[in-house]
Image (tube, rainbow, N blue to C red; front, side):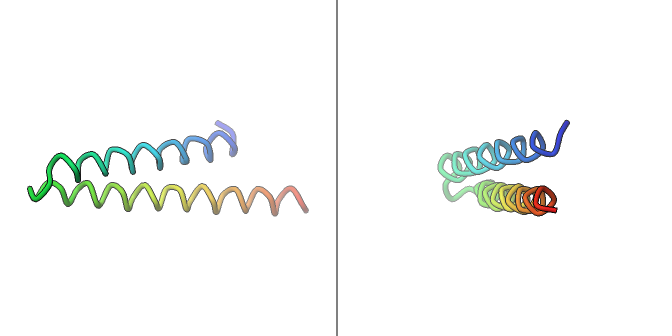
Length: 64
């Protein structure tokens, strides 16, 4: 797997985690399990941030 493939996979993972997290939150409502939806959304956001950081690092390396 290349660096760009990792970034692409992280972005897809981020989108999937946020989508599934939102569905959990919606369908479980006030059930304590709904908290896992919010946690999953947060983890998805973090995965997206990692992809952003890796993309910036790749740009810096390309300039050097």
